[in-house]
Length: 336
Image (cartoon, rainbow, N blue to C red; front, side, top):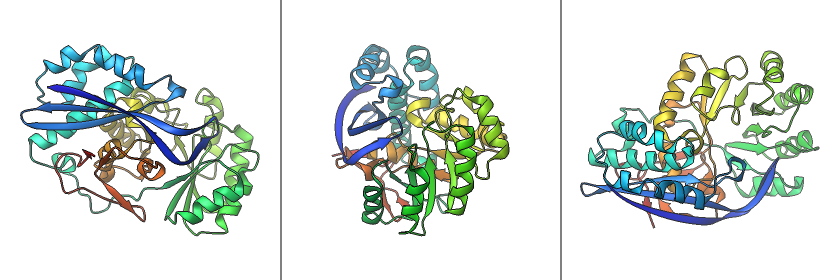
């Protein structure tokens, strides 16, 4: 296979703020794999919280360029297994290559990716749209400027309930909230009572991942379901989330791509847990890959291209929460 890497730095429409950071640009890396007259695209995101920068992603992939370029793709699963020993310390990098391999594999079969998996897309869940932390007037303005059926509201401030009350005055949309580890046990339980009355569907990662004892209490007592994010990064984390969370949010970038995500979905279902996939502000390349998992999900947060002022590619489009696939094989993503 031929390997080509494309680094990007894309501007956000608005400063993107969560409980622990703010940023105005999103660095990304797109990988392109070519074989037998076809090509596949994959993507991964820069993320300071996990000490992943684009230069590090590029360097770690380049270290294995010879292996990749001498490799003949048979199945994406086999490529992932063969790359994992080499990139087990950088699953972000492995994600870009794995998504590219699935895109290429589907194109070599002249199928869309969901067709390869024989999935029915007629009942796909709607994607939410994220409102980052800001002043209450600015958060209200962001909501009013972008009418949408489901909003994911970033919280973790001293005004969390006031924020939801203010936003609720302007829409009947479904709300989901994400505290990004900012709350404690009593705060979570008390907030859940008020948030339920305000039409919130669930709470994502209220507590730090290290506080498993606190999460046991929340799991047993919260009036709202809780979904794991920072507590569920790797495949091994799924089992660990049993009895702590009602569902998991899978990030392709963090777990190492589509191949492990498919295994995580299957395992979560075995435990009776809800399944969501989330965004790390990927462009249309990575988001188009997520779209093909939709029939397997309960919830999805794939609004990266909607939050970015710039993009890398054409592919899936979104309107009123619905996702529309490109009329192309593979994931449907093509670089501009």
